[in-house]
Length: 344
Ligand code: SF4
Image 1 (tube, helix red, strand yellow):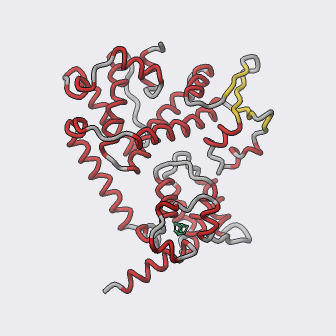
Image 2: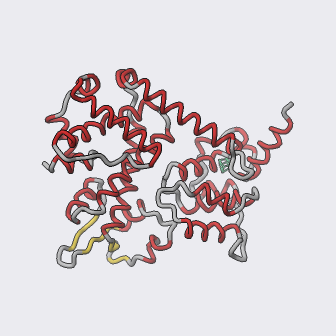
């Protein structure tokens, strides 16, 4: 079994779950008993920090009690997150837990980072003589932010299906893999009635904050854009970017070209990308200006619905009646505008 401080820093590990199973309180004890009040408070703090800072926060792990409270706060935060019942928030919370782990992994010995990678089912190996790590290309592609030049596979060099990778970059891939896993786990769980009762005040408070944020985004469109009139495909891409997901290149391309057709300036488009976890203004500006023709000879157009489907960025299950009548995402937006104008 790993040290308590390690379990506290990485509460998603199998060892941490085993520790709670063997030595932790029962769920009713965790939810009601006074000795676990601090764990409950930290659990809510994790969620508040996720909302405000996109990191669940660093707390003292100076003694065993600190570590145990930190460990127990994790299942509490997850149970409450499920009861908040907001997919945007779940993504945000999953990203914040993953980001928290990423920051700690940067300073761990390579052997530990490797063991986390194996637990997350990434095929990674370590050459102790050369002190170098490599990752199987499929696992790399699944988790790398390939929208950035330095992450493109051609710039990495592949040998027998493996790419060499630094510890920092491996930690970045683990962030993505963990974010995806946590988000999926939250989606699969149902809200426990007792949890929603015990934490009803915090659940309502966070739900209200989320509702206000949503209202603000919809009522104050950036530039001349009205978010509520966006087609389902663009809404999905915007929401993925804003919650910090790793949006594929084609999705980002389609969104930038779409917004450019609506006459948003590159700066207005950049505002939208600025919430991404590894947002780099200079690189994103370069890409946006290239797509919009501000720094290149070509002004790219947003793909039509057929192409969007081919690229896998038309969420077919979310298509509505209007989607079925149009053949281009821009037609969706303009039709919505016309419908709005005709309203008495
Ligand atoms: S049908 Fe067209 S407008 Fe509707 S979601 Fe798909 S790509 Fe977007």
